[in-house]
Length: 239
Ligand SMILES: *Cc1c(COP(=O)(O)O)cnc(C)c1O
Image (cartoon, rainbow, N blue to C red; front, side, top):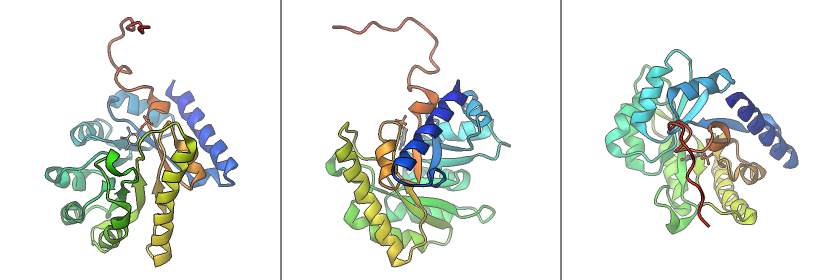
């Protein structure tokens, strides 16, 4: 039942926030619905969720159409190619993966006047070589300032996807690096309110380090890949 999963995630957020001395309501839950069909998203809507993260533009557009009329908020959390910027600017509410000025400019130019400005996060690459997405931390402030000045974009903050590790101290160090960048930009006067850090495996560390938005897929919808495949006997594990 998605409803029970959502409640368990909300409890986990509340516990992590309490441990950090934070208000649980200061952490938003973004449900990551990539690979899961519209029917599952609809179940999540019935469980009270209204904001969804998608990685693939075409897949997201199909779900937006299928669920039109529900007043949902759609976040692009996957890499954005420049040939998709128009569609994204027209249809999404948020883009969390802006890491180049050229892409930001195209999004701003293509954002329809009929819609409120596109809500944007700059994606920071805190794991260096390991990931190709995101801007280097040292270059993030200049990009953030440029994005903040674009007329049809509204810069809300930063996002990062550190490389997976079970080492909580390393998780926290990576998240802390992003939070410090974020605090520095706020101290400069940028009106930011969103630090998008943490997924199913590391949301507790992210909340401890100040995340205001966790992006959670697996803990809500189950593992990707077999959740909506026809049921068949699991392949027995070897060894
Ligand atoms: C898939 C994805 C998530 C969700 O990951 P889970 O481990 O399933 O919670 C979060 N953020 C991004 C950017 C993703 O691509």
